[in-house]
Image (cartoon, rainbow, N blue to C red; front, side, top):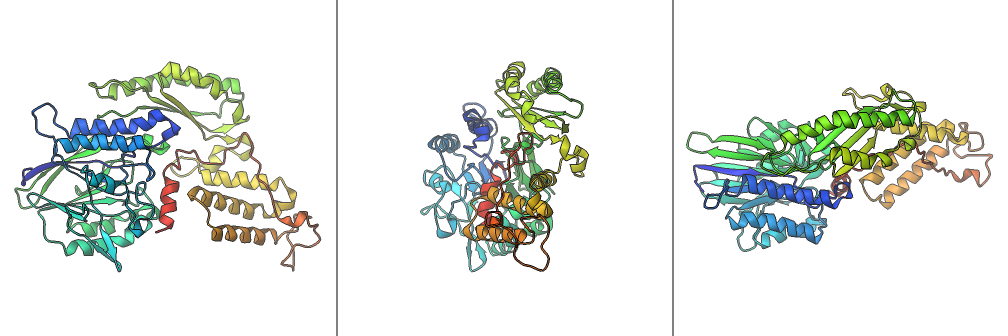
Length: 506
């Protein structure tokens, strides 16, 4: 490694083992994307050539879960062995998906295992009495907070802080300030700007991050699956593959970074690369407003596939790296607008084999974002950016279902709020006994404010009166309707439930 001029590869959010669409083929895609990135951008291009980079950094989420299948560990070991065999060191820190479940008790994770096998250097700060400390790499214990490369190049790792990310930056700054000086410092941090992620999930304002600038020359971020950068020192490459619907519209890839240290201050040139093996997506959207029968809508879908679908497939072919074999795409169909008949009557199951044949698709997926006509028009639920406010729509669905029972009609709004809150808690993870008790108490408070026999508010009494034992149970069941979908698409919440559950324990 030339101490005055070097290159490194910034990779993040590999998500090995991701069970996207519960498909083994998709799970394999994440491994093939990682392998392709390493072969195309890090390893020597030809026998006898030097490696393209001096080292690799991975700021979190190498794995999609802390609970690994054997094949996932095997795939990670294989790709990392390609780098090890070429003498390219790898420096990694943990992410929200692959941190140890009980890390505050000193429980090891899979990064510790990979470090023990010589595949990477696992870098992590530690916190003692509220202070963030960075220990130098210990070659015997295979642990540390920072690693010094030749020429004064330093790589520093941080742990996953989750909801505490913004508040911990000041402590990280204090920990960096007492380290010996270095010519060039790279800090690995799994989190991002609140422009892209809320503070509840590892986000912080730029005004906080900028406090790191006197001590950090390159801030290597992860966590957000879209590419962005700020002021030529803060870089987020995006995930290698898509893990949820919103990922389809973002830029993905890696940064290959060149650094020159000859001048008064470092010169950094970061090149974002995305020409590697990843599965293309043919994404289409169709408004259902104009179609009054399932037959009409079916024909519209066929026309869309034969027209726009084939055009987008050709674009995918043209954008795919010319030296690689084209990969059969994912075909994704979003249905929007107002639907005048039950969604279950749309013959999507029958259409699937035809769509796969027309577009040569490996996977066909659809998402129902339509609104039943009886709930109102789409314009009633539009956000400023044009997307449908799913929370408002869901709340209206709950309200209407509850209002169908005249006993609870007067409290429908409160009960709908209660149902939405309960659903959100369940999506986050297991509801604790204390939280269950809180929801039961709240339900009792709501039902105690109406007369179950009449559905009218009680006046001057804290308890329902004039009701039989059966009617005063205060229980109700929300029935599912075939033409209403109130749960989010599994892609939208993929990975987030586990992350939010972990953050609640921080």
